Amino acid sequence: METMNTLTRKTCGYGSYVVAASLLFISIGCNNSSISEIEDLETVSLYSQSDQLAQTMEYIRGLDRYEMASFRDKVNSGLNRWVSGQDDVASDWQLASLASELPESITSQSAFNHLDDESFYANDADYLQEVFWLKEIANRIAKSNVVFHQEYIFQSAKQLADAETLESWENDPDDLLANAIKLIQPELVDGDDDSKVKQLAQAVKLFDWSVRNVHLLEALPWPTEETIKNDSVDPRADLKGFAPATGTPGPGYTRHTWQVLTYGKGDFLERAKVFAGLCNQIDIPVAILAIPTEEGAAKPYDEWLCGAVIGEQMYLFDPLLGLPILGTKKGSIATLADVRKDPELLNRLSLSSEEATTQLDYRVTKEDLDNLIALVVAPPESLSRRMLAAEGGLTGESRLNLTMDPDALAATFKKIDGVNKVEIWHVPFSTKLFRDKVSEAEIVVSFDLDVQSRLKSLLAEERYIDDFVQLRTARNCFLRGIFQSDLDRDVRSALSYYYSFMYTDEEIAMIDRDEMLQKKLGIWKGADQSFADWKGQVIRMKQYMGRVRADAAFFLSMCSFENDMPFTTLKWLQRIRNYDDDQRWAVYLPYYKGRAYESSGKYEDAAEQYSNDQSAQRHGSLLRKRLMEELQKDSAPTGS
Image (cartoon, rainbow, N blue to C red; front, top):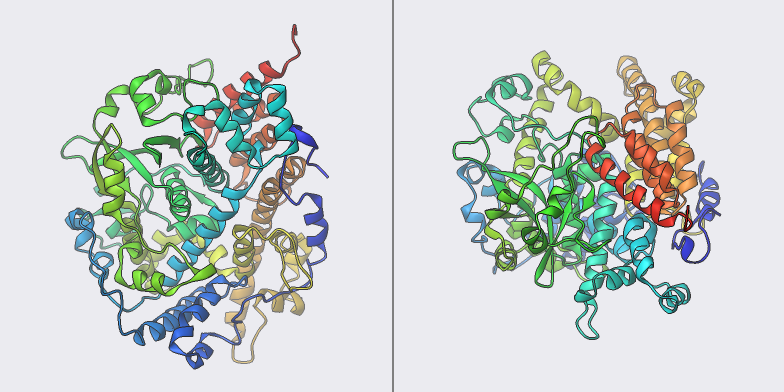
């Protein structure tokens, strides 16, 4: 087993037992949904009105994923059957005051105009799935006790700890990260009340999970008229229109949060959406801090980072760097008040030409801190009447935080010194606008060659995942933290699924003749299907299988990392090159190898990997290299 004894490497992971148990399940199917695809939601119509919501939610809670359009239609039908029997559909709902201040480019769109509707829409199923995932992840990670994902903080605390403290950590290793933070930042403790320490520890864990599990893409610039002309999915888009509504990809709004979680990638603003969503599930308010742009600019502000409010302070987490902003005291997390008081905390985030190929200045300066905007991360659905009704109808373990109160959050954020204005962030609404336009384009893509060309790159990155049902099932298991198969309960783990995707070249080549594999992948030729249609399915599946096996190798490395198995993580990262035919993962590997070495205490090796990072994560990786060099120096024997 890789995990080491005592404080050298404390973990709550399953370790190698998970791998062994999962291997038993590689060739075994499962169906742990309370409502199977055969017994679909049409059956729910037989339940009483009071049971229909709970039964519909069981479909979302199930482990197996199905064809996406069918999933949406069935969940939508179940929700509308439930709401049609309600005498009172959230009669206390009212539009948040802050929402009425959104710009006309948002308020004129259907996503805003449907907030008062009582009926549900097909895409509401995706939102419910998204929130359910966020709740599952937040609850699991917030309670986790793997400190070595935050190696710098923990090792900094160990330097402050006396022998008695270290012994107490050894004998009672409950929430070691919180204990480390308490030692570094004792001001968070109020008498016997250490709730702020625990909240900050939870925020650190959730942020780091978001960083690790959303590999960083370059953020696109805000679209210009020329960009809209060339890149919009609609050849007839209004070049002067609001960019997201034209169907032009842009910063932060290209993917819904559920897509970011499914695909495991996004730009730094999409990372921020994930982090804010996770914190919302455990009642930690998070804002996106932004800097106003000059009058007449294409967008009113430039987003900076995430601020988590704990007590009366806002703690800063930079999703572009993939790091919290560190405070003056070694290992501490800086607040907005800290960086306003001591701008050097930001200045030291710049890199010299000796550290990087060219000097890399941090993108925010002291002058930018004089007029900050706090942006409330509120998806359109979270402001709607229908979600308020659904939230009220869910009880017990089924309860989800489906709604948000922007006005209450605004009051919280306005208390923070340095926040001069609070708005609802346009990005969640813009994502809805952009994706609606993509959906419209997909309707005509088969016969409109111009639209086909414009959608090509987007579909290439998404369609193989959307269509590969078993891969989405594996992601569902991963996000739910199901790393151990259970034969007795007919539960198959994420590991088991991912192992089964490691197809050989021979298997891919033989798929048109392997009926068993065809049935497994859902492409067995039916009696009513033409040979041409079936052959097209087979050709697409061959292409998908090549991509899926590379993704599976990467996600197997992430399964290992989640269970504190850094050396197994490294083995899978090394193996990716054997499957990644088009080298899609190559640029991301140094960062993840660095994280594995860092987690195992091999700081010199971690620093080397971080120095090789050429991805969008590079600036943050080079800052991590600094931290590793510092830890390496601290761990060196005295006199060496």
